[in-house]
Image (cartoon, rainbow, N blue to C red; front, side, top):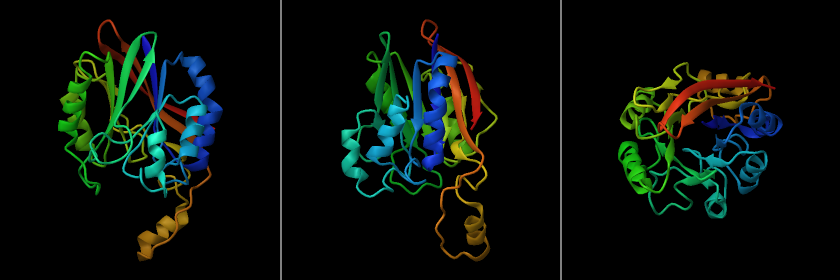
Length: 260
């Protein structure tokens, strides 16, 4: 049985610190073969840098995925090509820099990892996530043993629809972006692990990881403000997936929350 942990959106320094502090023990306790983390908010709460990506990888993360904030940090478009275990969303235009997937290998088992952006309420130019997933899975056929698909999207309906669409074709379809963990973790009928949102790894005494007061102020008067990363009630949120290579199906999908 292969065991995988996906870590939900890592937010700022508090998120990076809890990953560094807790991941080594989690790898040992759960016998994890693969660890994947969404890092699109790891640098200052918005975007990623080469340095913050390397800090996550050094902490024990095997692959770092990204979402709609991937270009928020100045200069990252020139850094991403140097990061072999970091992948941008696969349904961005082909002209975008960076890899559209990462391949992880353990004891001869090859796992392809990729992200697709949803198109409901997100403003980035992106290909249809359903057709992009088809394209990626066709590309991996006969070359990979399984695929892990992250759907970085706002709409719950879009995430659920992609889970059903890929049931039996992907080891897991896990949602990110809303920073709020959902209660629907499970294995779909044809063997694909699914969860609408893995939640946020960062400060939960916040509004989506940001200090509460300026966010409330913006809702009240509409005046733009800085939204600093919060500090309180730091948690690691993610999902544990067990996958049976012989049966070619997931056997467990369970939300994981670890408090600092």
